Length: 333
Image (tube, rainbow, N blue to C red; front, top):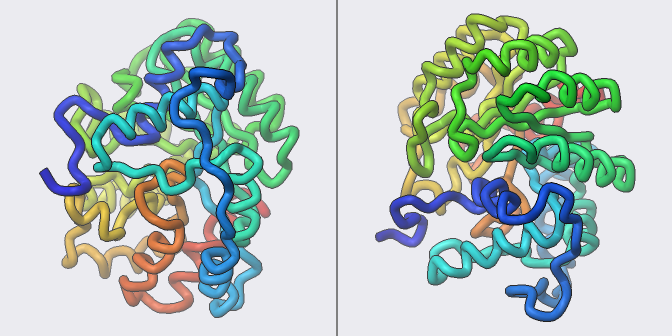
């Protein structure tokens, strides 16, 4: 097993967030910081050198900062269960940013991240509305967070998605792997329609990494796009490991984007390497590649994602668009 491998049946750190949430009641908003809480947040170190290195990347490009479209904030008790799950893997997936919420927010802002998301997602009915309430409150407290929401195929989905849009949601998250649901489920037809009509982006984990689900891979979501051609989709992790097929999808659909989350990093090369021969195609969809990281549940420093993108050697203009310009246009910032 390589250092980036995950045992059979396991999930990525952010995938586990939904599963961990299911172990709580739908209204549990406890902090999880009391006696007996597993693996409490570590004392905050001095992030000065790291922040300076991250800031130097975008400053050298003449950018005003970064926009990270794939970050995770969630109820503290849920996040601690995510960390505990990955600690149980025996060091295969170390959590780099195991800090309390205020420290994590301070870190992102210190890196120069101007906008970020609070992506969450359910894996059973009855969870999404609660997660949306929490994420809405988080965005109200942190106006630099793009207000985020999620959904699940259930009879109530149309109503709570409509409510989320009315409340000002800027981005949705759908996780076909963790949720193990078919995006073509009739219960989601109105949901996709509402989101498409609103022009609100939806980050969709539909690739088959780290393990395939019953509805992962390009075809189920490609069929959804054929039914809802106006949908603005952001394919999480650039569709890893099905990079070629999802590049095809982006080339065929002008509203399909790809996010960079963990792609091209040294860690991901062990389990989902991006084919070298496909790298030139990233210039053809240069206006639809979005910077994402999976912060805070990543097994490497934030700077590694930036360096990985720079190593592609696709030019400063490409990098400027990916790190800031494309998301700024997409979200009207």
